[in-house]
Image (tube, rainbow, N blue to C red; front, top):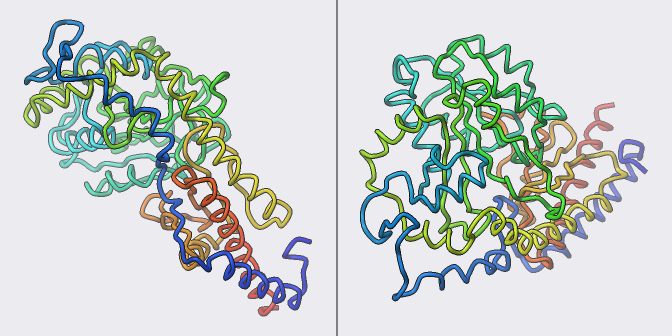
Amino acid sequence: MKYKDLSKEELKQIHENLKKDLGNLTSENKNYNLTRGLPSFDMVDFSNDMFEILKKDSDFKTEDGIDCRNYGVLDGIVDAKKLMGELMSVPYQNVIVGGNSSLMLMHFIVTLAYTKGLVYSKAPWSKQKVKILFPCPGYDRHFDMCKSYDFELVAINFKEDGPDIEKIEELIKDDSVKGIFCVPKYSNPTGHIYSDKIIRKLANLSPAAEDFCIFYDNAYAVHDFDTENPRNLLPIWNELEKNKKQNMVIGFSSTSKITIPGSGISALFSGSEQIEHIKKYLALQIISFDKVNQLRHTRFLKDLNGIKNLMKKTTPIAKSKFDLFLNILNKELKDLNIANWSNPKGGYFISFNTLNGLAKRTTEICNKYGINLIAAGSTFPYGNDPQNNNIRIAPTALTIEELEKGAEIFANCVKLVAIEFYLRQLNLE
């Protein structure tokens, strides 16, 4: 029976049984990390051969004859620009290849906008009122980056096919709205895939702010659970070209969840004018990123087909963990009417919704029993989840054995908090 239909005595008995079950499940005092989208060791192992690609007698030269061991080539070697251009579905001439972190590239762009402005800025963003839009639930690091510069963070709801585009079109009539952060495929944490309609409308926005920027973080471009029949995302570049708005988007990607997270390569793309503007200020900071690592990646992965072939090896491991966690949620919670959750077709996260008002309490109880989650509210700007119901779950870092126990503990914690809620309601009647 659903908890809301039970008597006080029945709820108390279930509550007592759950506490005993949790005591048994957590008797080893282990912690289960569900905080971040980390590839597991066995997923990363498939990229170990990359370290053997370059040896002491290797030719360290790029296809156009650049020696990767020396200085120079600020925007990345042509081999890597072509690889990342394929991954992002953009011309390689419009690509800058960076170090191991796309987040660092994003931060550089936000800092550039704040201190100098972007290519069409009449003044640095530090001299203007700035609002940034965020489809929510969203990625906490995006929020934190913009909050650090005192930009006003504005949450936008998701619809079934992506962010509320009509609301975006309304808000950008305000020239203080300077940008929007998008994760267009397997959005973090909801798993949304932007429809063709949404991408076309984004690529044809007419904002009041001339320096409005779409921060297009396509972190999960090839992270499909069904690697034989991937969910294709409409390339935004083609739409931008049609509308002559290439400079309005700065896109980002990396190999962090493709090869080795701490030693990957990242990239950004934009229109030619924006790229030259970025390079002008990037050159003040660095002579070049790690070209040897760029060469290592291009010789290991070769091209987009090489990337997809590697994903066919790693993705089944990730999918098996999602399947396990979701099966336990279905078994333990589906019929109780106390929660709902996403059923992603790729990416790295499950978006889990408790009953309204219970997310913070649920994460507190989970932490007590060894389930580590990011703080409730983190998927909204300022940590303010208006419904206090969203929890992000990242299941990939744990082993199958750890995950099975961790999922059971998590489900029992959700039940425990829901029963407490209904007992409080009965006491108020």
